[in-house]
Image 1 (cartoon, rainbow, N blue to C red):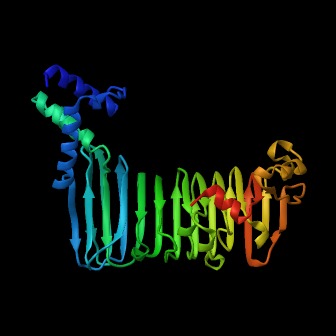
Image 2: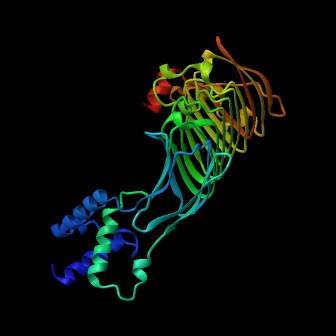
Length: 367
């Protein structure tokens, strides 16, 4: 391949990752380039480049503390160990490096502290030749589908604390690795928990939106959530949900909240929502008492459409009308079904409750 053609390819590669603000679609037109990328991918996979074991011990760990993982953000996975050891493995992307320190104290608390950062030292070399530049570009494309991440393997259930100033993705892969308490305190992030786990207390604080699968909240005793926007869905088949296993108490502070669920999200729900609360659920099945205070009375909601007009729109579900007083307050039953005894306390601006049967919810959410 001529140097001029290679130069064009390298420029296209850099453009692909945004260095020149242009995304070409023709870089795979040169067969030799595609072959070089595929060879590099195979080499990366077989060699384990970017994989580092940073902690390996048989000492007992009772709690994992993930602290100040800042920079470009980080993805953390906690998995069941195949032996009695605790291991921490970090995976670095080509230009996304995780600098990680670990420490186990006398109380069995394993602390992970570090920084995820962009590493572009290769471009700072004044002696960088064309071949090195080309190979670097090839490696960059080959590793594009890899992610910088931390994998933690534990043999037993542990409490988890996450306290990060940047984006953090936490994925608990197995319910056996969860102890009784999980605190997820981040500027932005995503939390994925195993279904029907053994947590007793869950605390989430995040400045961005959070979406939760109700299956991952079942069995938990107390949940505290303080986020920008909260969405809770009951994914899966409705037959997997046992209403007796919903959380005992859920407290939520948020700007907006959206719920689409087969069953109530907790036995006692306390909501402080700055704007709108929207709930789609099969209310008729359940006995739900409430104490609600809204800034805007119900008759001012939904562009002043009449209740009859809203109810006629079957695509939006049956709108539940409540007799608010002149101060926007209502205390009493939302529904008087045969299942359970639930309490819903709300302070908010607007409220939209719609009665959906379980089949309709399942069709909307999918599973």
